[in-house]
Image (cartoon, rainbow, N blue to C red; front, side):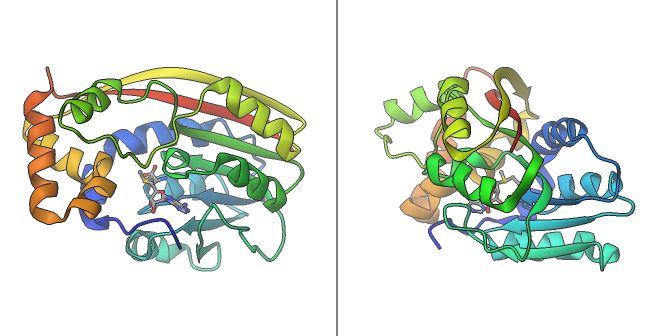
Length: 244
Ligand SMILES: C[S@@+](CC[C@H](N)C(=O)[O-])C[C@H]1O[C@@H](n2cnc3c(N)ncnc32)[C@H](O)[C@@H]1O
């Protein structure tokens, strides 16, 4: 599995910006309440919990590549036993679900997946005909000021795919989605100054730090935080509402 592990307990403590956007994405799902919905990249399950609230007679499949993220999600959602199942899988591979789901939601995840052609193919295979796909992820232009700082620091090897709405529409069509809307939105997000370094290390620079090692990685997070004009992440989102 190519995807990396995450510091799940720290992520869970600083996840408010991702949870806020995730709750907005879940609200876009058109649900009766008895469907089976896949949360693709569930993380620690904060967004999955709001998805479960919209499915009083339905089920959720919480999928993630990180065992540590799944561990925290299991603890959070364990009370919904019978209505939630957990799958460890890499979205770059076929998902291998037992049967197609009624809908898929994914928040703050797809920009961590390199091969978006394969990603949308696997999602289409996992979705029943007519099923809905709702996505929030980093899009073209995301965290541009952080990218400039990383470049100044000589860090040019990044894990992210920041796709445009147009590229994503073409991928959705190729994967067999019949209707789709894709759009970009700006979500600049201020952070408490004392949380900035930890937030950068945990949420934004985790892959860089895994490559550099703990000491050089912590130094990178410090250097990036020190060079930012203000404690504000210039998030630019790629949004998708589609049907297979
Ligand atoms: C920023 S977290 C978002 C978690 C959650 N959706 C939220 O909004 O809080 C990104 C998640 O994507 C997962 N992820 C990244 N690449 C993945 C892949 N290729 N396959 C499955 N999950 C992946 C990570 O393990 C992590 O849990």
